[in-house]
Length: 206
Image (cartoon, rainbow, N blue to C red; front, side):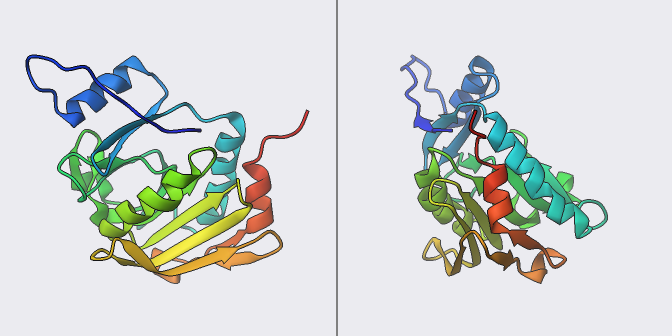
């Protein structure tokens, strides 16, 4: 999926970015509309491989007992960001506290305090996931950020957010043939098989 910045026409009455985002969501069903760093973007609907990859990614978290009880595993849930007055993101996958609905901010977005992990599966928008969202999620103090980088065949696990520097102090990279273990601070031990997850998120050749 590729995310493109969106221009909106001038009106007599100024339109806020959040209003423009809501309007764009109505005009482009299925698109993922986000505001990151004050920039409004719209990402086309995911392809089948992306959707399959997300399903496979949910399984290790569920097998670890993280979906139900104290936490829930959710796809495409809104994350309110502190980087701008109207900034928000929609991670592909998130691990949140079970009481996340008590932390609603606005526009179906929730306070980052209830997020234990955010995960993105990249495609042609890999630069946004590897750069812009690293800064945004670190500033929001998301404890763990996982990036499934299909373009380069790697999985990135970023921990120890440094909001002042808008980055993560720890950045691990794993390649096919390796397993990477997520911090137990998310609530349980979760191991990711790099090759299996990358293969699941890659379109099958006809």
